[in-house]
Image 1 (tube, rainbow, N blue to C red):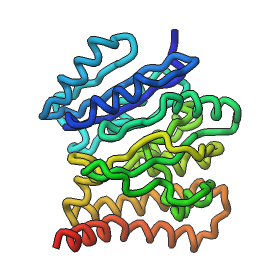
Image 2 (image 1 turned 90 degrees about the vertical axis):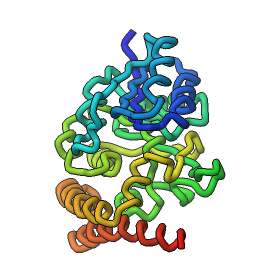
Image 3 (image 1 turned 180 degrees about the vertical axis):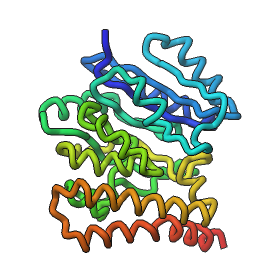
Image 4 (image 1 turned 90 degrees about the horizontal axis):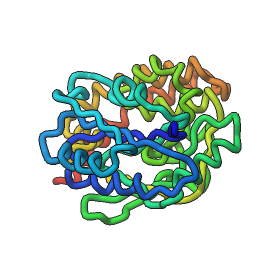
Length: 278
């Protein structure tokens, strides 16, 4: 039977975390079939072996993609180029290999919400933030409510990748636009707003490991040069999104300000991290 949902997981050197992520996918209790696509970006640790052990036990559910060279380091957009095109589901649920889901009904709850609203393009929920000592340090978003304008402006702490499930048919036509962004989920959230409505479920259904080893954020924050380059790419792409798909009628001057605001984010985080070490 064709899956209704494709769970997409990208991973690299996540041997400490990947089993917990996969287990959290497999524990889902749903009224529909789903598939799990795991992309390993040429890990040099035991991550591929762990994935293979799960594939042998769940060959009809888990579909692995093993790279022989690291595609991310060569500038490839992993999800857009290698993972999403292989999905069979109407909906795509996201979770990276160092994060995990916490509720057995997460998928069921989100799919029911999406199917109940024909205009919905994406569904999200609260996510707890966990540090390297497994201590809960926060929540995303940090506010009590989330709306589309707050996501664009960024005042709500935004929505996290592990909470996202989206309607593929509403997003696929924007794949080329998504490629402009160094981080696909940033673009995805803004494009989802332009192509439909975003549903927010006020429940904690997943965990985000902040600054886990080999995570994207961890690697970005290691280099001030990399942070500045990333911010330059981000400001260009963010400007394109806001000015091209501005259905919320945000004044141009404010839109430009929001874009310029992005250029300080990652270098500022880098500097703060250095002060903390001192």
